[in-house]
Every structure is written in structure tokens, then in C-alpha cells.
Length: 341
Image (tube, rainbow, N blue to C red):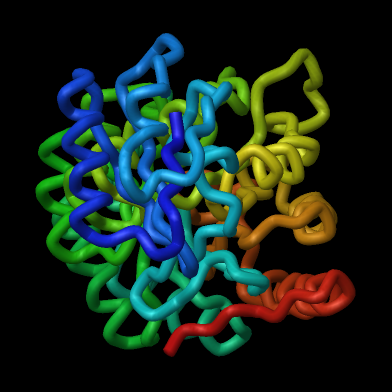
């Protein structure tokens, strides 16, 4: 349920409505707007009798919300959300490029990468310090040391960074230094972790699970936002299908669908979708043309020597060429490339 207040409703009237919602056993969630305030009613799986609320002073309308994802849905908020990460805006008509290696391997690797991607127009640095891998014998990341190296790369390049958290311990390590926390595909429905990153207040990049529907993704975002954290960016990174032409199947259809269903910005990870270096640029351009608010691209100074995801990582020269193509397509669809401060 969404309670729409009159544009001249007083703070006392708004508080009275919130108190009435609590008396009914639900949770009020105020949504300030440019002209009026709306109050979302959370915790109601079934339709609530709205007669009592409609008669309260200051109430202009009561709307029954049909979608299970209430806070992240367009029924609750019509205007598009822009998420700011270390001075970089994601959404709002710009295209934000996040780039960097799959895993942080050394100071030289991450600092040189950060400086280079900044020089050719990337606005954010990505890099994994904690690496959940399919094989227990694969490189698991530098963990806390990796986070410190990302912070050094940020200082050297001026780029804010996003890095993945996989559990409570990694969240404690990353929350202090990271500009944005990433929830990977494998943890998209780790609901206890979603609640914790929601409580952290940090911007969150939420990746779609490998076998998840768009509804599943939006419901996971709802977990984060229900904890009071509205700084959420959704990420389409491909899903598993019967096709063996690429590492995953990039669901381009999901981009316009999500933007119609949700007010949250959407970025696309063409690297994990394709898994093949020379096919990443065309997929990235298609994502921009489909309305994506950003891209997340894996870049490594020497992909053949990478400890993680080398085959899908671009080298510096290839990334520079790809950025030129991205800028051209972005301009064609009326977007500008976001930049760091």
C-alpha cells in the first residue's frame, strides 16, 4: 500500500499517519518527493482495509501496490534513482564505466590498472579482494591486503572502488574502506548478507544470480532497501542457458524491463556474460544502446598472466579502443560518460 499525502500536509499529519500504520501492525516508510510525501506500508502480504487511513487529515489518496517488490518498484517511486559513489553518479542520464581486474594480485598490478583506466575515461575501479571461486583450489584473493591495495590505487588514480563481500567477516573488512560493496551472483539470495549490507548504509552493487529471474533480483534488492539503504545499483551479468556460445547468456531484454519495473539504475557486466575477450566490446555497445546506466569491464595489464578470469579480461590497448566505441554509442543515445571528481 502507498499512502499519498497532500502537498501541504504538515509534519504532524505525516507522523499521525505513520503512527496509524504502526497500530495496524505494519511498518511505515516515508518517501519524500519534490511536491508531496508518500508513505509506503511494508509488511502487508494481503490487501489492507484503507478506509481508516483515507479519512486521516492530510491524506489525498491510498494506492494498493500489486508488486511484491514495493520499495524498489515504480509503483512506490516514479522518478529514477541516482546513486552517488565517491563523487561519481550512477544513473541520471550518464553512463558510468567501472573497470579493473577480476582479482587484486599485487600493488603494481592494481595501481597501474587504476591509473590507466582513469586516463581513458573510466569513472570507477573494480577489483576483487575476496574471491568466491568454483574450485576450492583456485586463487581466493588477497583478502584484507587486497582491500588496502585498492585504497592505495584509489589514492593514486582518484577513482572510487567497488569490491565484493562474501560474508560477515569480509563485510567488516570492506565496509571501512570500500566506496561500494558488491554482492556477487552466487550471493544474490544470501538474505542474511543482503540485510547486513543494507544496514551498512554503503552503496551496493547487486549482481543478478546465474539462474535468477528479474523478479528474484528485485526481491533481493528489496531486502537491502527494507533495511533503510536506498543506494542500490542492479547488475545484469548474464544467466545460464543451454547455449554454449558464451560463458553466460546476456539478457539484454532485462535492461528495459528492469527500468520499467524499478527506479534503480542498471549496469551491465559484459565480461562475465561473454567470457571471451574479443566479443566483449560488441556486447558492451549493445548494452549501452539498450539503456544501461553503466558498464563493468574486466581489465588487466597482462591478461594471460591473470590469476582469475584472464580469458575475459581486456588489456590496456583494447580497453582504450573499447572506451572510444562506448563514448560514440553513448552519445548516439543521448548519454554522457560519467567521470570521477
